[in-house]
Image 1 (cartoon, helix red, strand yellow):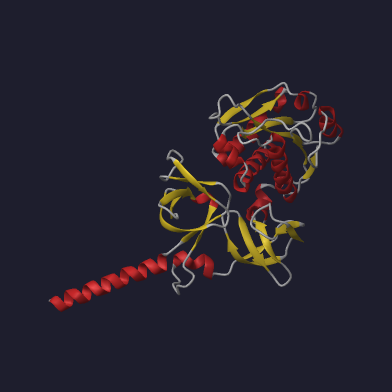
Image 2: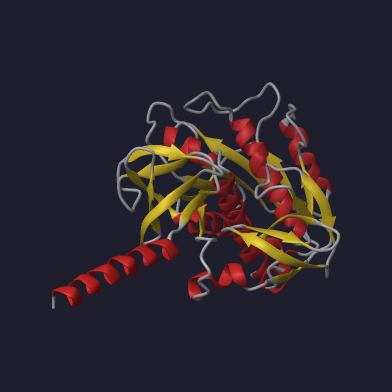
Length: 351
């Protein structure tokens, strides 16, 4: 009996060690300034931050959150901004590793689709791929594919190559959309908690939005293409002389006296533009989970003197230190842009 128990104990330990080896996963961080918390939820205390390309062992997963091993102690991060890397030394081929062992082929859905040298719009564009070209997927995370073929290798935004986009966003094709990046040049706009400027946030969002709308077939016009001062009159002259289907002025809020205030809002001046304001705001709120402060009347020059469907959106409070950090991440900017696109698509479909 003693020999049998010893043998059984030995094989139990061996099995547990093997199970640990083959199930070992690591979290690869896909964004900067990702908050680490004491538990699986935003209601838990923030204890630090992790950043792009950092790798941490995963201890457990729960309700969309992952507990990672830090240099000192452990913490929880949302799984929205990480990739989970399995144990590549293992020969295991179970279901959990099928994504890495099964070859995936994607087909470019739009002409001039941008390929970059890294999984973020902050990386340089290396190539433009045309519709119909096929690529093998080398790796992927929540938002990007790493792809290759005989001619090119690079990273492409998933949303630009998923087949369903060509049908669900067909209403965007050939629409003329004017995007107004608020402020610019000597007019810095609101000041963030750490001294950031609203004009820079607005410009970043505008560039991301232009890229996505263009890929979906829209004709995008910008009121400013760099960090320059543009008068209010010049900002509305473009949409008024063009056959404009929608005008969106991009802004961010600041209320230093109440640094904990949060939320997004949209403004319209003419009653007929209430619908587009509500659709866009609902799209952003759904995608980001941000507090919806409502679509309301606003007496702003760029929408008051605008005779085309026009709104002004406030996409967050940069006076809130935590939100200011979040708003600077590529992952959250992508959510804002996706929300705007979804809202516009709903508006155009219901016209």
